[in-house]
Image (tube, rainbow, N blue to C red; front, top):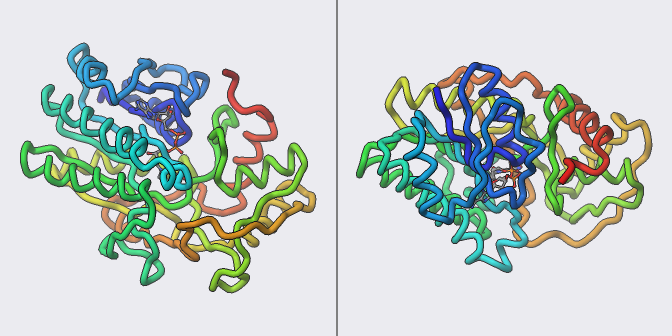
Amino acid sequence: MTILVCGGAGYIGSHTVAELLDKGHEVIVADNLETGHKAAVWPGAQLITGDLRDETFANRLFSARNIDAVIDFAAYSLVGESMNEPLKYYKNNVGGVINLLEAMKNNQVRYIVFSSTAAVYGEPDEIPILETAPTNPTNPYGETKLAVEKALKWAESAFGLRYAALRYFNVAGAHISGEIGEDHRPETHLIPNALKTQLHGGALKLFGDDYPTPDGTCVRDYIHVTDLADAHILALEKIRSSDKSDVYNLGNGSGFSNKQIIRRVEKVTGKPLRCDVAPRRPGDPASLVASSDKIIKELGWKPKYASLETIIETAWAWISSHPNGFPE
Ligand SMILES: NC(=O)c1ccc[n+]([C@@H]2O[C@H](COP(=O)([O-])OP(=O)(O)OC[C@H]3O[C@@H](n4cnc5c(N)ncnc54)[C@H](O)[C@@H]3O)[C@@H](O)[C@H]2O)c1
């Protein structure tokens, strides 16, 4: 298949491009390189630089080539920033996807896998979270992702689009080769920040130690980026073979507290980690743990790098060999 990967120069997109190429697909990456990196695009993929907020660019992507399906990662994803600049998030995370869907419709491309998020659930009533749980986002970022999920549903009934919306929990780790990994600027995720602190010195900010959890710190569910990449390919195969759309959670089904992560980081890096406790971040739920039973049962998804040690070890291999991230 020829697959258009929007946001394929970003963290999760670049790992998915690597897996798609490994499976023999032809891959076209569309990215504005705003948070992504040219050097993250796996050799063999064609990079087209441009912005999905530009309708003409979105249409040109399809009119110039035969695309069979789309995987869309392109979005802003900083929760805190979305609280201060909600319209920026709506313009990109909703506006960009609407242009993409219109271009797909104009060019009879019917299949899309979309990056959604655990943030669509908000503060959950029950753990682990099932796909049927209520969706009540507590920040504009989660709202924009939920708005797209709803647009996909209406596009399905109106013009036959088929989609898989994948609601990721916390994504971490790096490609097993050590060639690509996580390089967000700024980085807001715990594992890379803890590892960077080990590499460059200083103290890690631990946001809140008074949550109603066993050790007072937030509990999260971590999934390896390559396992997540594989799930996209399975989801794409499934929507094509069944001609049906669906929504799947993607996590590991077990929660680790921030303090537990810190202990594992110390174990992998072999030295103590300095931490400063900071106030809670607004909109951070105490505990987010996925039930991924649906994708395991229905699509036969089998995570290869599920252990927390492997997730942290691969992230450490990438960060310690690329102390300044990707070259610009
Ligand atoms: N990283 C996580 O833990 C996580 C968790 C849940 C959901 N997600 C979602 O997964 C997706 C990928 O996340 P990531 O961590 O790889 O982010 P990322 O910032 O590394 O990747 C996003 C990519 O999209 C590109 N992009 C953004 N807006 C664009 C536009 N208008 N036109 C063209 N390109 C554009 C960026 O340059 C970047 O390469 C996002 O949609 C994010 O919301 C991520």
